Image (tube, rainbow, N blue to C red; front, side, top):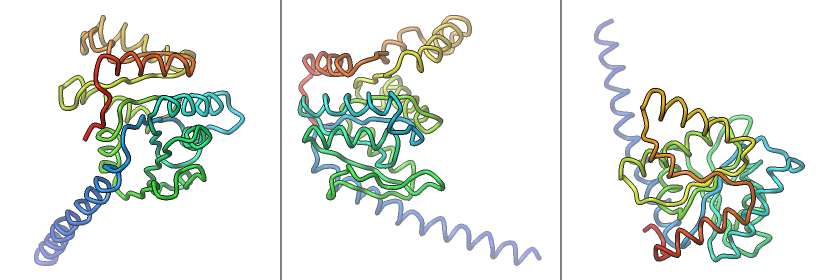
Length: 228
């Protein structure tokens, strides 16, 4: 029994070791494809948002307005807010990138991603690196756990100096105000687990014009260039 368990453990270790090659190949694939695209802004939000939802419609406007400023749009390539972001980029005549991943019941490609800019990933963490490395800013629409994960990872990386600061813009005050109030009152003021200065990393807005104003203001102070 012990010998059998030992052999099984060795098999697991061997499989883990070989998985490193697949992980490396995804990084190489992502770097080679994304490095050719140029300055982009990533848009995040729920895959469950329907086309008739006000935030779907707002996302289309936001993305279209952003590409007018010369940026491309990166999304997760799926339905909902992701589809709206790519649709806005497509309608605005800008670059429309999709970083797809296979998820049960939820993820499928949307038709508004440029045919030569639709990338597929198996690993969430590789995909997340692509979002951060090749984005000039994050626009965060209403979303669920995945959206929150991307939001807080970006804040943490900037807060800890692991990446350069870039705009993080929450869109939808009626959706995000409760979270921001909780972060300020509970985390920053009551328990002091974050600094009030960290709140300056985030902007909260309601319109596409405000999104573009924040991007323009930020990159008027810094030369606009790809993050790579």
